[in-house]
Length: 220
Length: 220
DNA sequence: GCCCTTGTCTATCATCCTATAGATGGAATT
DNA sequence: AATTCCATCTATAGGATGATAGACAAGGGC
Image 1 (cartoon, each protein chain N blue to C red):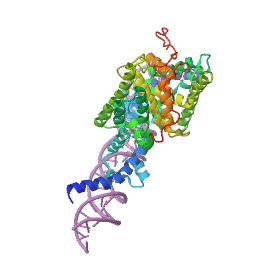
Image 2: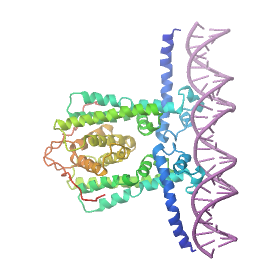
Image 3: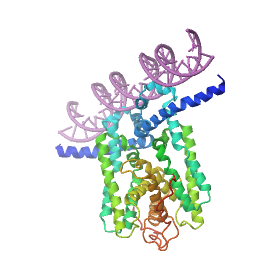
């Protein structure tokens, strides 16, 4: 068996099970927090022995890194693509909200762990993620700034605070979106977008962006 | 010494030091999370022995309860007072934002622990706090509903989602308000209020609430 | 001077938890 | 059929951690 074949079979065989292991870790970390969770808890979810986990990761911290990596995956990239596009700042804002919320649908636990437990990562990877997130915030801030400069957004607010406010709003969704009563994610995007752009006040002449009533079949 | 005097002297003597102990616990819990923190860490902050802590609380969990209790203190009450007042919904909204942020000034660590670590409380107190918080959310939702019914707020948004959005926004402040570059809390209130009520869009006739330029000497 | 209270200390236990080492059984490969 | 590889197991080391028990020093009231 050649080296190439070996690495291929490794890439075929391991990932399936490894994925399951990491998913279990994500679930447990999300539920109890990193330090509140034991490797035994993870093993229980999988129905295997605690020590068997170490075949897949080399330490509990390592498992956290794997989970966080997947939880953080794509945020910056997706935002950067949207920001670099040719839409108006208002349209971009909608895209950014949507892009931030979309990962909650397919990997909520990973996102949760990434958001809540990343501070427990070893210094190196924590720094790396922090840097990525700063860049992410920057992207959003720049879109807001652009909108202010183009006259599309009001210019009397601090773009950084607006960015933080919006981020806080969307980040908090992870805490309740899958608890009853369940709200369709697309509706959250819609409402938050309208709220952010148009504001709560009814006393407006030309009210912000017209609300999209129905959306194209698959947009998510 | 009568029973009454005894209980008075207890309430005079202990609280000073007890306060310091709980403050240390709050600091450590805020920094490392409940399970990530050890009683030794708390003792180190105080410069005493780990075992000495147990003179002040009976278990680590008990310490968490004390910290969380103080962190949660007053939120619901302050909001209820504002909601019951005679101001307009718009004014009330400003008050609610302010009331939520104010505790960050004098006890940020307690609030942090309350927000991030309350899930690790023993079931009983966790339930109690959860209930209080639901009531708190309800108060905010009702103010928003009232504004919609009075025609002061736009009525095409889901009041619950608006409440969640606003809460997410203000809750996130605990994560960055005391990191450089520091922003005066009153300014955060102001900007978030304007953003929420007026929206980001510049295309409005009568723009939401006029921004308060200078505020009365002491409002906090 | 005596005694009680208060706050802290020393010493220690028992438990829990991560991580390692090496064995085992079955599947795949040769 | 023999060998190798993979995934899991058993057993356990080793350390950290929460908590208890009891000693002790300082200070105030009697």
